Image 1 (cartoon, one colour):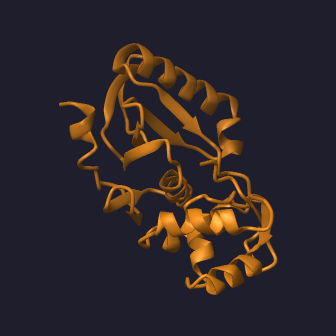
Image 2 (cartoon, helix red, strand yellow):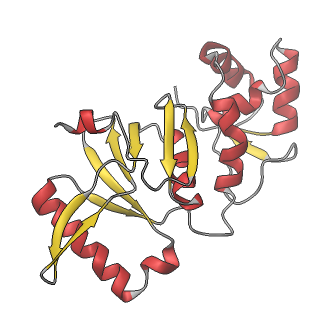
Length: 210
């Protein structure tokens, strides 16, 4: 069975959190809030085509004992390559035995499975505001988006930085809903803030490059 087929269905044996994926147009099942946050981040990653949580289990021998391991996700990238994703809190992954265990699994995946196993600790920092902001923006990411109107508005900006309230006012002045500005942020015409919550006073930096 190819990995494309593997992406069609996940195992629901242990799910505790259901997350609807706009990118996959299907429900994804996660075993922790950290895994659900990782799925949310994937929704905003343009390099990721699709992904599947709890994709499949692998059997392997460790200290003469047969054990099974299920990665947290199987991810397909724009270039057609795949990787398996293991989501772990940074503090736990830093523990010697845990780190050594997953380094062993990573080597096993490279040598036997043929697709890398990546350890994902990116959304573990409590001070990071990325997740609260993505949770707010996800609603706007799922709405129908007029990219032509967004491009026109970008060229009307007075500078490469604008606060959200000013962006909402500019949207209204140009015949769009004020929340169109949040749609533009969700679709990454502006950099998504990670160190502060998005508020009307938040200054947004243009990253649109066309």
